[in-house]
Amino acid sequence: MKLTSKLGITALALSLLATASAKPLKVFILAGQSNMEGHAKVETFDYIGDDPETAPLLKKMLTEDGTPHVCDGAWITYFTGRGDNNGEGFGKLTTGYGSRRNPAEDGGKIGPEFTFGIKMDETFEEPVLIIKTAWGGKSLFYDFRPPSAGVYPRTAQDIEKDRNPESGSGHYYRLMTSHVKNVLGDIKRIVPDYNEKEGYEIAGFVWFQGFNDMVNRDAYPILPADSKENRFAKYSEWMADFIRDVRKDFDAPKMPFVIGVMGVGGENAKGDGLKFREAMAAPASMPEFKGNVTAVPTSPFWDEQLGEIDAKYAKVKQMSHLLKTKNKSTPNKDGSMSQAEQKAYLEKFEADLITPEEAAMRQRGASNAGYHYLGCAKTFAVMGEAFADAILAMQK
Image (spheres, helix red, strand yellow):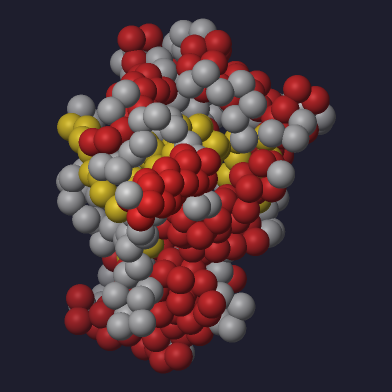
């Protein structure tokens, strides 16, 4: 009888302890365009280990036998697609949740989500859920246009080229919010052990987008040469609207918010590139967002060595075009070179320009174009961890 009582008391104590230690599920929302999708192939992981500063991070990304890490306490749902063919992939967080041709299948790539989730899984005892929505080639001024910005007003060029209909204004904002709400309405579908009694907390949002706005001259007209204004000022305004709107839509008024500032090309941005980065970061300096919105520059994560090698390959590609078009500055200006001769010339041109060591480094570390941060896993890995650190800093 006494033993039974003691067992009962012990069970009760353990139950109370478990209840006291249980905490709400941590939910993080990641959204943006192609670089939030992520175009770094898993095959470039080993390059991370070549740098003593990032080698420890690689150990977190791989198991002892070299296979990709699978998080025990972090899950992900990733909503993406092409055109109207959107779909979802979900499961425990691991590699393969970067850019996907089929939303439901491992794409063999990573974006910022992988190391972001690893960091959060390490940090919190409670489970973590990442809700990621990203589509390549999407703008803030039109595709992700927040409700507070109003319906996108078509320009004369839009009408002439029959593009950007008003019905599509904010379409991807609506897809994003709809998916987030659908997931939060049935979390057990993604996280089987989700404790409904403890509930969830939306603990942060990461926005990583910008290229389609930066290159647009219609929504952001060129200003006179003597203008002191930033022609991308509207991006700052719409970004602030976006932050307010997602906080309202997700009932999270102080949700930590990270703006991933475009850093393609590294630290040497000039002209419009620099102005756009300034416009992206500007909302973080607004008094109303003090302490809960942070801009994280990604230019420091650009791989300078790979970037220099990539620039050399661009010269090879350019020479190929010049030869084919009989450019006057090439040996084929008179069109006398055969295809075989052009090929031989190009091979020598490349060999003289790019060393075998540089070619091997590119093969090891890069897997995509410059506007996708060269598809370098090292870049995306450091970036993802930086985004996580920024959110954690805002929670202190």
